[in-house]
Image (tube, rainbow, N blue to C red; front, side, top):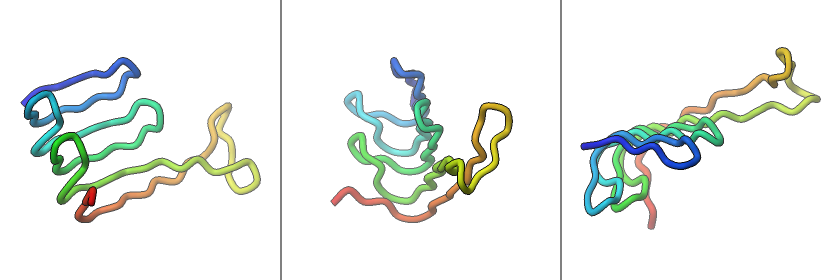
Length: 83
């Protein structure tokens, strides 16, 4: 088990095998703000997990708060596979 902070600021905290994310872990993407918590298989999301994605609303449908746009949060639960 260990934690890795990538050059872009993204963070993975969880199990590893041969320098690959493998087992249970949590990854947060600094660029998009999306977050995955669940099972990994050889560096890919695979198995049970939860993916949280943030979708920014465009100017026609969303309100702005200062310089930030309103966002929707989408939670996806399920079994992930990389077939």
